[in-house]
Each structure stands twice: as structure tokens, then as C-alpha cells.
Length: 535
Image (cartoon, rainbow, N blue to C red):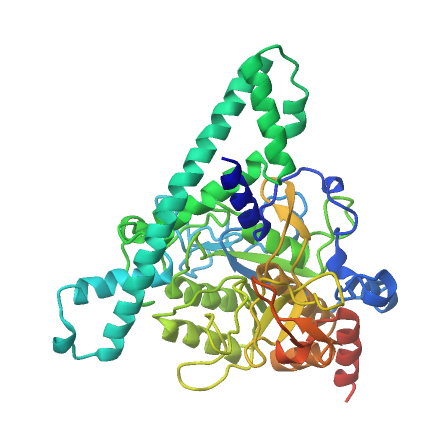
């Protein structure tokens, strides 16, 4: 068992599993709102939000409230630090079962959930897009030999996905079995100790405090203490078990198809966009709530954290399950956001394949025509997305490049060779800018808080800065705002940094990892916006 623990500990060290806490004081002061810090004043490589508020905005009033749509897995609209910042549909009467504003969506108070039906049933887990494509191609090609195939490109994709699917399917089957055994052992040990203690044991500290003459119990206590020393806690194990189960039962399982059961729609068409329900929280709102908190958790209310932008409203759009999102849901979420007044859309999700990319492309162009800015996370695979695509992106099937998309990599608290997060995707052409995405503290559902890593959380830093600047300079177009953000980065272009990788990695200049060679900077962006608007 010791070897299994060591292996699992190594795996867990590369992932970020938070523990929801009711009070932010339990997190290190070093990381609370560090992304708002200024590198010179605070020694943390943040985006100078606090400096902007103190030195530039103290006697200045915002001109326009900015609606920021968060397309994600769900947002808790009643969180204590977010409820006053939520967008509320001004012409919709809550819970009356009537489409008061005639927009096709009944009781859409905070936004809309495209992962559910009118009965209130919601999709939670989903396949990866590669699994969905493989399921479709398998039906077509499994009984056809190479010589009789007319579409060679599609057939080669089928063969590639077939190999990839079964490799991963078998690996996760083995891993799921092993982790299940470890979880069963942990659960039994805790159950036994709780029987001896006569109470629920919620932490290693409580296990250590158990006093007993039961020899078996003392052996179990020693085992728990030893595994904790090796970096493995019960909550870590539970989180990793859940993730492995998702990979085995959902992501790589062609027999799992909740979409067909719950919605039964045509995922290749948006001719009928009026499905779903108003439950924007859904089945797991951690990710979306965390993103929303970074953008706009209520400032100066003596609760939780301070979001970046103070004169905004958060619109919640649920379109991202545990697994890969459908292009159709993303496209309709973008269109809903645009039609209902959003000026910025945060998109902290991505995938390797986009079979209905045309639907998303059309929605991106629709947003572009309406002057809406899209901010997208680059992804967490330590890969060069100039070479290996991550969707959605700004390169349209038509060959055109959308002018209203910003793609964001994740940076750390440091300004040394570890500026780029080790997990972050990168690309001189496809990644525009970096922003803090490591050791971020933000909101989690039901009035709790958490700490996590990811480009998913770097993107809302940029969305927040964009919203903050735009609220004071609403005369800027989306394209001009994007130019302002790019021109005002904290530039590390010439600095040699470690290329994101799961191994040791080589170094390169930071400008080779992203278009601007820098980290977004709110203070400098305000200066640039002021200069531009006075021309």
C-alpha cells in the first residue's frame, strides 16, 4: 500500500483540489487577492488592480455598468459575496412560469442553463468530445475495411480515436479499480475509528486526538498519520477518486450518453434554441462561482474577497458539464449573452475537437458585430496551442481571425523563471497574454471559499480588468479595449522562463510563449485608455 500512496501523492501534487471553507481567514494572507497586487509595491506579480483603485480611481466615478457573462458549469447566484453583483433580467418576473420579456426563455432571472430540460433535470457528467466523435465514427467504420473507405481523412481520424479511446479506457479502468480499493480501505479505517471515538472524524488532527487501548485502532491511527506525512489526506483521496471515476464512467465511455436521455436534441443545429431551464447553479457550481468571484465578488463589504471590478453585473450561463461542452450550447450561450446586454463574455473552458465549430464561429462573429469582447482560457495541458489546437479559438473556419477574442495563459506570483504556470498552455500566436492563475483564492458554492489553480482562473482576471477599464471608458470599442490591454502589459518579453511542461523543461524568452510577452496590468491599462480617448 505504501508504494500506491507514494504514486498517488505524486499524481496529486500536479493537480489542484480545494477544500471549501467558510472563512477566508483560513487561507494564507500571502494569497488573498494577490492577483490584484503590484509587483513593485507588493512584490507579488499581480495585475495592479489595488494600485489603480488607490491612485487613479479614488475620486473618479464609473460611467457605465458592464454586464459580464460567465459561460461555465454553473454559478451560485445567492453566494453572500456575489448575490448583490448578479445580473437580474429587468423584464422577467421570477418563478411565474411565463416568458415575460418574450425572449424565448421562461424565468431567466440570472441567465440560463443549457444543460437541462423543462422538467428540471440537469446534465452533470459528459463524454469528452473525442469520445463522442469516436462513438459516431465507430458506428460507421467498425465493419468497413480500409480499401472500401472513400473518405480517407475521416477514416484516419476514426483509427486515431479508436486507438486513443481504448488506451485511455483501459488505463482508467485499472486506475479506477486501484483507487477504489484505496478509498474503500480509507473509508473502513475512518469508520472503525469513528466507532471507537463515538463521533465523526473530519480531519487528521481529530484522528490523532483519539485515545484508546484498542490495538487495531491505534494501528489505524498510525497509518493515517503516516499517509498524511507523505502528503495524502482523505479529502485528496476522495477528490482523486471522483476524478478517476469521471474519466472511466463518463469521459471515456461510449455507452454513456446523458444528452440523449435528458435533452434528445440535434446537437448539430441551433434552429431550436429554446431548451434548458433557469437553474444557473446546476449540479456543481464550483468552477463558475470561482470565476465569477474573481471578476466581481463584492468589494469592501467585509465579506470574503474583493473581486476585480466593482461596477458590473454577472450573468450566469450554464453550458459546461464535467466533461466536454457541446459546441451548440456554447454558441447559444454567446448569443444569449449578446442579446441580453453582456459586453464581456468569460469562457473558462476548452477542448481538443470542435465538430460543430461553424456554430461557435457564427456566434463569435455575431458578438464581434455587436461589440462584445470574449475572454478565453488557453487550457491546462502544458502544450503549444499554435501546434495543438484548443477550441474555441479566434481562427474561424473561413480563414478569418476574429478581432474580439483574447486567449489567456496562467502566470504565477513570481517574476523569475517560473512566471508561466507549469500547467499552462502557451503559443506565440494563439495565446495573447498571461494573467495570475496559481494559488488563487475565490468563491465556492453555498457561502464558502476555496483555493485553486488554472488558466480557467487567469481568464476571469483579464475579464475583470477589462470590465473595470470599460466601466470608466465605455466609449472604447471592444477592439480598442483589446488594444489597450495588450499595449499596457507588464512586459517580460525578453525574460528567460521555464517552458510549461510536466517534466524539467527548457527555457525560452517569455515573448515566445504569448503574443504580447506580458501580464495584463490594470493600472497601466487605465493610463493607456486615458491617452487613447483623448486623441
